[in-house]
Image 1 (tube, one colour):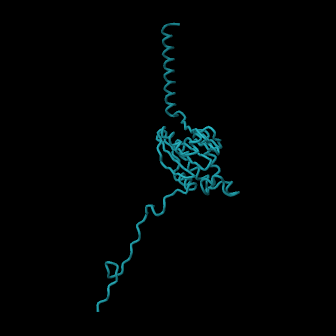
Image 2 (cartoon, helix red, strand yellow):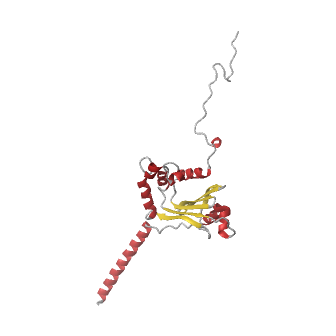
Image 3 (cartoon, helix red, strand yellow):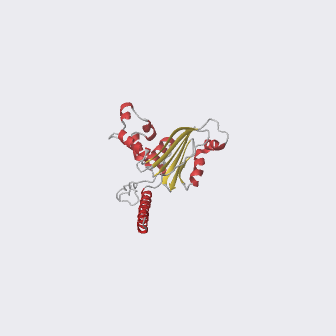
Length: 234
């Protein structure tokens, strides 16, 4: 092979490789690596439900399914035929429509529901049994999370927010069951608030709520600046 031809082939190969590398870089910028939302489940717990889906795979399919199940009045076909569905028990009337609203801006959802044994003697399972929100808050703070909401009691609730990636984590402890959910993308917090209120009764007391209108002014009797009636002159 002539030296000139060898150099020509080498330059052509180099150009092709450069274009391929540039295309790969652009593709990576447009399609960032999949997010990871780890949820620790202590040894000895029994997983009842787990869902881990993203917008471009299982989560997108679930959104399409929910939209297909929802009728124009916000009810599902099952609800119309045989009464409330499990989604209605969780979110209230029109549960499927509320779930669609909840997930509208969520791009990745990892959900785990598990049961705790009756007698946890030691280890992580004991920590979760004693205080599940505290156990998970330590792990979430180590990832840069910050507490947004906490409600103690038999049905304890913890919400932690994350900046990178933007999203939240929710922990709900109900008797022997623990529900942990993490998202990329912020869910509709109005729907989240409704779920918290349904399960814990937590809400702003009426007497401490900020009034939205000014109180009506009292009408004073004519002829008095203080509101007291004046006696007629003799």
